[in-house]
Amino acid sequence: MLSKRIIPCLDVRDGRLTKGIKFKGNVDIGDPVETAAQYYREGADEIVFYDITASSERRDIMIETVRRVAEKIFIPFSVGGGIRTVEDMRQVLLAGAEKVSVNSAAVRNPGIISEGAEAFGKQCIVLGMDVKKAPASDRIPSGYEIVIDGGRTFTGLDALEWARRGETLGAGEICLNSIDADGTKDGYEINLNKLISSNVNIPVIASGGAGTPEHLYEVLADDNADAALIASMTHYGTYTIKDIKTYLHNRGIKVRMNW
Amino acid sequence: MISIIDYNAGNLTSVKRAMDYLGKESVITDDYSEIINSEKIIFPGVGAAGRAIADLKKRKLDQAIIEAFQNNKPILGICLGTQIIMEMSEENDTECIGIIKGRVKRFICDLDKPEGIRLKVPHMGWNTVRLKRNHPVFQGVDRDDEFYFVHSYYPVPDDPDTILGETEYITRFASVLATGSLVAMQFHPEKSGEPGLKILANFSEWDGKDYVE
Image (tube, rainbow over all chains, first blue to last red; front, side, top):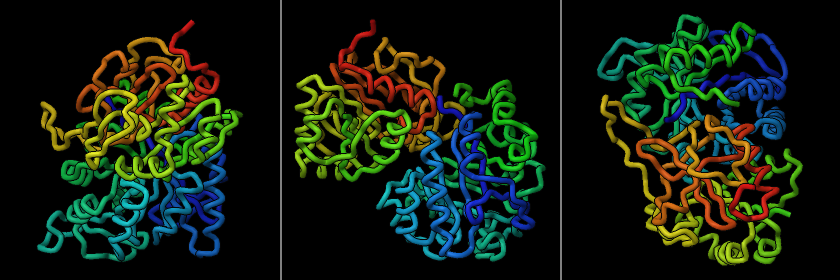
């Protein structure tokens, strides 16, 4: 039986680690390579790097970071943030990442999903979705709207429709981030995860809102999500991956306990 | 020297990096004679079967693999590399290398579990492998160890004796095949943490004989 994956997310800017709270007020918490290696040793099932470096000339720093990470960790890891072209994808994958995720760029140019899937295989392409609650309307029937540019730009796209379209275009996985829940530590947005997960045939990673192991249980039970992204709950030492996995294991969720 | 066969099918560098980390000498190559003359062969791959076979044939690398197998050279197949050693793949209706008799099938999606929850394709993530017997390449692997899978197709060998390990997802499928000097796995040992590295290290030391002392 397939295990549910626990995935720490590392926000990286200019080659250093940060963790944003609601996309504002980032604080520097260290070296991404060392942190990734530590998460690898502590039983993370996968690692996500989110590059928030603004300037394109600094992208080389990220590629170098990816290369150094790939020498040290032997589990899958993905890189997102600022990936706009198939060539951007190629660089990240050649440097050693297993997957790339596209978010704003895919909304602006959905073709990047199919081009990426064609070039590298669907399993490489993660569709990152930032989602905000909206009043249900003809345009947003699910009551969830896609936002881009770190939550600043409303797109008028319905989240469920976009998820289905992403799957059709060739995304191999969806990373589903609730902007409303992000940084609150009040738990994932269960309804959103249930809605998307039950309507696509590709895995869904729940993101945004994790504060306690119970929050992971809530979103992983009943197949509301296939994996759970975590950040501050382990970045600041409140919990270890092992604490979280032991809790889930004891509550009957299948997780990888040997590493 | 261990040859990692290069046929434009992806994940070559991650296999190479894992071998480097283990201190095992390896080379990524698409050169027929270099492959034939190496001590061991790793046959990796992510991608589609149709294109992979076409690329292999163009460089006669399918012949290199067959010859190496006939000469009892240790061969390790990974993921797509495990599928295209079969006779035939449903993916692009591809005729494959045929070292192991049997076909490659697709997981049937939209299958409902009894409780009505859909299982997703690809099979992506960590899962266990139940070994049917011991094998030198799996020495020291614990029965609860998990491995990283990402695939939509799986091999169905005609001869059950070629199945070394099985995994449960949608159905029970052959996740590890072994015959003679060939051992082939559907998961990615290079992305499966310490248990995966153990398999790569064991393979590096393996003489190609299918027994455990």
